[in-house]
Image (cartoon, rainbow, N blue to C red; front, top):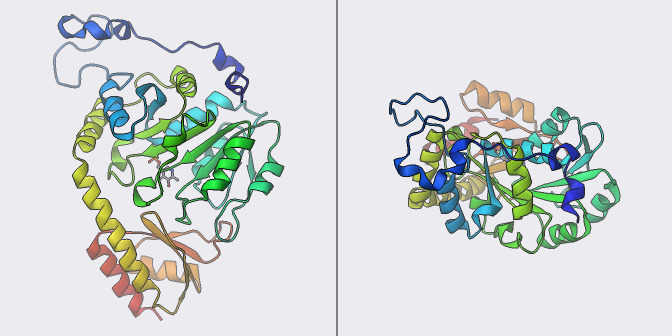
Length: 345
Ligand SMILES: *Cc1c(COP(=O)(O)O)cnc(C)c1O
């Protein structure tokens, strides 16, 4: 793989935006800042945030054992994914490859950036078909998106299949690990230094309970991260988000307890749902949701809505006919769901 060949021409020539403050970062303590037209009166939020999020990256680096210069933070993974598109895909020329049924944002971002989306469906066990993928790759295909555990099916993808793609595909392989904290499978981040074309994304939106702060994390080689750093908006992670994320990462026990509860509840729901006659199939989940196939998804969806419970109807996606995706809630929310389902004929 030649990274320079993958980067868009206009971006190869760009330099990262730098503020005067960046250059004096190490001297900061006693300086008088008259450089950025901020309001000088201290409110704890009157200064621009750290554009490199140094403190936050340091703790992520320590916890995940990935060097700080191999980490980029975004306003949610959605911004990270958008930056990857904009760095590597030439509008109206390049293509990406996705594996439906999967996360809807890849398609949205492809449309937004005028990039062709080549779709190679997962098989009926929601596993990847390596040969078919390799056949569908074009010379213009820059990115391949793999979601593991996959949304909406909940399974992780087979390791050896991913390894073959990392070896044989000459573009970048993006592995979306939004649900990694709910599975016993290990993260792909430990392979970053083996595969120069690997990008892994994670988020604080699911397991960490911080969807509201918008913090997505991208891990890759330092060369890929340097490219993304050139094009990211300088102050994309606001001060409140940086503070809330630091606090959560310093209090990991709270998060681990919640993950344990969600996994327990996932197992309880699984056992209970097996007994309902209108549920035709339960897909084994390694995430914080369960995909079920029912007799009539529209009917069951409406019945749930009428009783105040919102789930997601995934019927329109490949291999997901009559499928509903149910997020694991609190123990009492799950009991409410099970009680209601029992009354349905
Ligand atoms: C929820 C989800 C995300 C999270 O996106 P954020 O922008 O970080 O909230 C990313 N990928 C997948 C597959 C998801 O389901």
